[in-house]
Image (cartoon, rainbow, N blue to C red; front, top):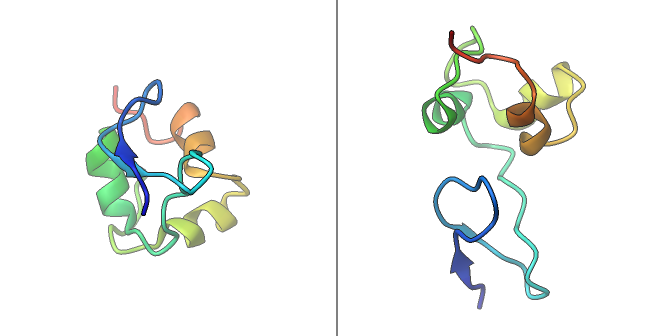
Amino acid sequence: MSKINNDAPGMKGPRSRTNDGTLREKRGDTHMGTIEKMYNRDFGIRSDMRLDTYLEKNNIHSLNDLISSNKGKKK
């Protein structure tokens, strides 16, 4: 069973971990509207677009890379 903690630096809310303690990746079928709300961003896309589709179209490796970038930051 996975342990749920929010002890990682910059982590928003609880995320489950794998058996070796590393954080699991965010599910690819998460809607971008959810990501926009969680991280206070506006990517200018439909809210029902899937995270994996957005990342692939924009050649971004992970959610962490997306959030670390300036994409969608509100002014």
